[in-house]
Image (cartoon, rainbow, N blue to C red; front, side):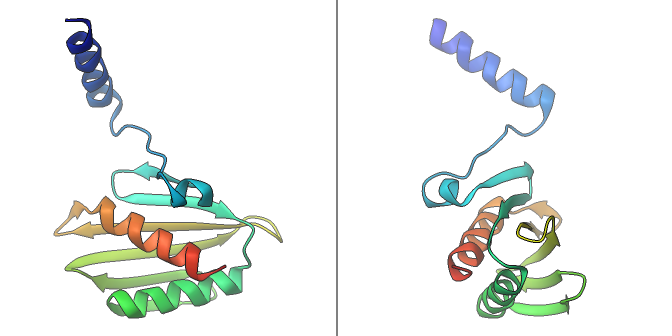
Length: 126
């Protein structure tokens, strides 16, 4: 009975506060990725902006079709697996870059695709 009450409380808190915080497990946890919304994975890394951009461009091209890209703004918009994928790179400091990947399929969040692309970019940028 206690387990059911605890589970109900957890479900209720997720309902009240929105999506539960999610740390992407396994290999990604080591990469420092975390969910910031229902469709977005974000993480900061010490990999260079150039390395991340090249990896993001390559992964986007392999996974689907690039619709728009702007290297100076750090933005890629692509279509992959019937989803729109938005990749954003932001220089935080001279040695730190933030990678943010969002994916939506028919206007609904596609967290699995966002996580997968995030991981592939971080692995490619090594």
